[in-house]
Amino acid sequence: MEFGFQTLFLLCGFVSVACVLFICLYLIISGLPAILEIGVTDFLFGTEWAGKQDKFGILPFILTSVAGTAGAVLVGVPVGVLTALFLAKVAPPKVARVIRTAVELLAGIPSIVYGLVGMIVLVPAIQRAFKLSSGACLLAAIVVLAIMILPSIINVAETSLRAVPREYEEASLALGATHIETIFRVSLPAARSGVATAIVLGVGRAIGEAMAIIMVSGNVPNMPGGLFTSVRFLTTAIASEMSYAAVGSLWQQALYSVGLVLFLFIMLINVILNVFIKNKKEG
Image (spheres, helix red, strand yellow):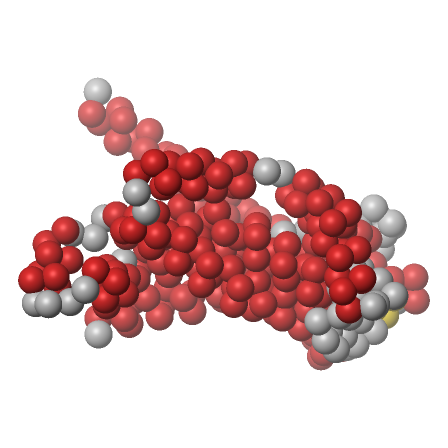
């Protein structure tokens, strides 16, 4: 019986790895020919995108995705980590239960609903507040992404904080530190590996979101010149144009290439953060 379960677990592990390798291989086979035909420099650093005119420069999409993800992380990570600290170390049980339920509900909301609420509420609010011709811009995308990554960050960070041995905190309190000092100087550093994992999940959610962002960002292939510029992300470029591109055309292959670049971005972010976490542990 035990051998059977070990074999089953091993098989599931191989299936997971095989799925990742299959996706990677498929994107390389589908996207690499277009990059080679267009030219690596023209594709990655070109500033014009017009599928019908065979112009495929994705630099605006790359910069927009980086700016949008960075903005969402700058807003969402402090809020998420502080909320996790409150739930794990400060909040009374009844209050924590209510907030935790709200966070779980937030995690269960479909992304299209976030986009719909953002389009109906947030976009007009930004338009009125800043007297813009259109409120669909990078700022709206950042706000929506920041809200969407909160559940992932809060849940994982709270679990890590609760796993910190109680002895660490008791020793800090015995040395004269206050409860808040203990939380920030002992509990949070001890849980940094889990908190970093939460950030990785949040970054992955932010950089991979499409449907919600396409509804609030304006979906225009502009360079991100500011928070109030209508922009297009890597994900929204694929979602908005794949149905229009002719099957087998250079346009469709270029969209596959965009997916390949996005996949490589996510892998690069995971590798960098994992190396950072490993160095922190060794230090």
